[in-house]
Amino acid sequence: METTQNTGSKKLDKKTLSHSFNLWFWGALTCFSQEHMQTFGYMSSMLPILRKLYPKHDDQVEAIQAYTAFFNTNPMLGSVIVGITASMEEARSNGKEIQGDTINDMRAGLMGPIAGIGDSLIDGTLIPILLGIALGMSTDGSPIGAIFYIIVWVLLAYFGQRFLYFRGYSLGDKAVGFLVGKQGAAVRYAISIVGSMVVGGVLASWVNVTTSLKLHGANGKVFLDLQDKIDSIFPGLLTVIITLFCWWLMSRKHVSAIWTMLILVVISFVGVLCGFFDPGLSY
Image (tube, rainbow, N blue to C red; front, side, top):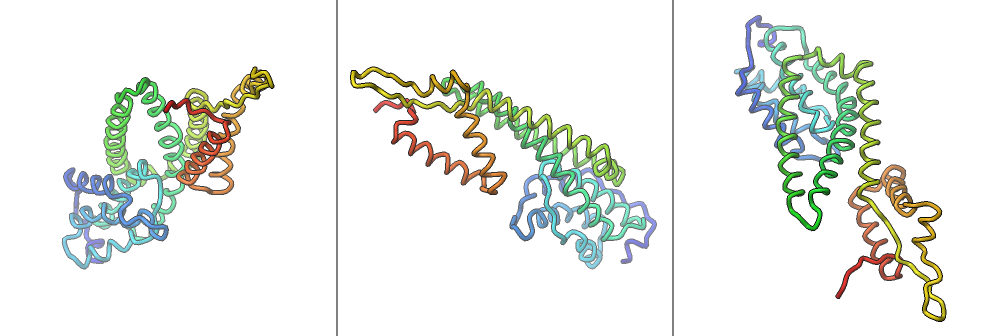
C-alpha cells in the first residue's frame, strides 16, 4: 500500500475526529444483526478518518478491510476503541509498521474488557443511580423525574463518549496495555462489585411485592392475613422471591428482559384475578 510507505506527517484535525465520533455516537448500532453486531457502525465511523488520511480511493478501499471483521462491545465505552483506532490509523498512514491485522487484533482484544467495564459501570451502576433519583423526583405523578433522567442521560452519554473518544485518540496504543492488563482487570472487578451494591440498593428502595390475600371465618372476620404472617417471619420475602425468579429467568434460562417483563405482567394479572394481589384500583 503506497501510503504506508510514506514518511510524511499526516495529522487528523479536530473536525475530522468530531465527524468520526458523531457517526459512532448516532450510528454505533447501524444495521445491527446477530451476524455483524456493531461492525457497520464501526466502519461508518472510520470513513472520515480514512478519507482524510488516504486521498486515493484504492488506498481507502484497502484500509477499510481492517474494519470488516466482527465487532461488538459496550457502545458507550466503545468510543475509546474507535479513538485508539483513529490514532493507530494515523500512525499507519505515516509509515509506521502497523498493519491492518494489528489494528484488528487490537479491536478484538479490547471488545471483551470494554464490554465488561461498560456493562458494569453503565448498565449496572450509572443507570440505576439515575433511575433511583428520577423515581424519587416522580412522586405523586410529577413529570420532573422523567425530564431529569432524559436530559442528564443524554448529556452524560454524549459528552462522556466524546471525552473517551478523544482520550483514546490521544493515548493511542498506550491505552491498550491498561485496559487488558492487571489494572484493567482490577477496575472491572471493582466496578462489578459497586454495580451489584447499587442494584441491591435500588431493589430494596423501589421494589415492594406484597399480597392482599386474607382468609375470613364464618363470621366474616379475618383469621389469617398472609402478608402479616410473612412480615413476622421474613419481611420482604415476596420481593426476594420475585427478584430471584427474574434473575433465574434471565441468567439461567437466558430469557430476554422483554419476555421477563411480559411474564411478570401475566403473573400479576393472574394474581389479581385470584385475589392474591390487589392493585388498589377503583371502578
